[in-house]
Length: 284
Image (cartoon, rainbow, N blue to C red):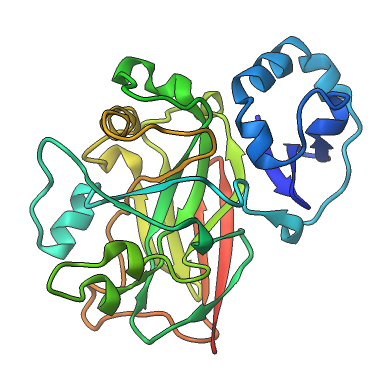
């Protein structure tokens, strides 16, 4: 199942159009993303039991530009650093051992899949990422049960102002990665069963038509189920939370010469099954 937000209403996306969830369920489930995420397990059970009804429901036409961030205001955004072996190698850093590198991004940085982002400086970099959307919250979730807590997967960019990120005496990852528009996500949430191999999902990005990143989640140091186990061992995960799971090799900051984003750039981030999000840039 593919789910997206249009006009702050969650919809099931079919090839022929969008089905408003609140309407097709006769108001049994709320339209707003946060309210529906809080009842995600109930909705999945309803959708499974009424699959024929859902498939037969009228679908409204929409344009890709109509899609908003699938979770517009998540309660928590966790982000994982150095979670791809090839990315750690290009950065000249050791792989994390035992536990992932974790930081937060602030929800005010979330925008949708067709956003124009204002660049705060000439030191902004790109990081294509697979993003986990939590459906069932919890604390102390075991690795064996982790996927039961996943509503689906979407796509994100962890845009990063590198000077702020590395500003001493200790790094400021959360601030450097939370400017307005620095967390584009979308275009849809895809439920886990839609992926032929959810442990090896291809993703990457192009900048002005040139391939920058081209990787697969099979290169992750900590897989999704292990991330959920380790994060929930400390924090209580909430419905609608996002987990940015790390980026493959090819970021701009480690290139020689460095590649940073500038006004007029067009960044297209892609992942198999999920689709694309397009981010353009301007200056104030």
